[in-house]
Length: 144
Ligand SMILES: [Fe+2]
Image (tube, rainbow, N blue to C red; front, top):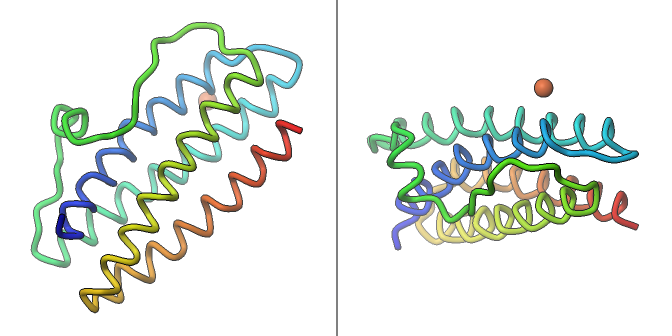
């Protein structure tokens, strides 16, 4: 798969995960409610910034970014979940799994872009990978 197609998939994941993180943000319950509520807000804010950055990266490369929710759902590998009360640990496990999947895809994109000499994508995705590493550490620390 060309890394531009991977970028479209990544973009789709950002859109779906943005809503999914809101789902946790709204519906988490338990003694550490505020911690998880605020943590997920920090994550969806970042994902939303990335959505615009990645779409504009594609525009710079002359590629039209996927721009409808229907296309995002079709191209995303993020699994949605229905709203319910999410216990603290369950919430954190969901967040952890998705952050790990995003980190893995971001790493794949970084490396594929590097092979094509696309250093703009490399630079952007190196930052994204570092951001995921930091947040995975935060989740792991909260789960201990
Ligand atoms: Fe909120």
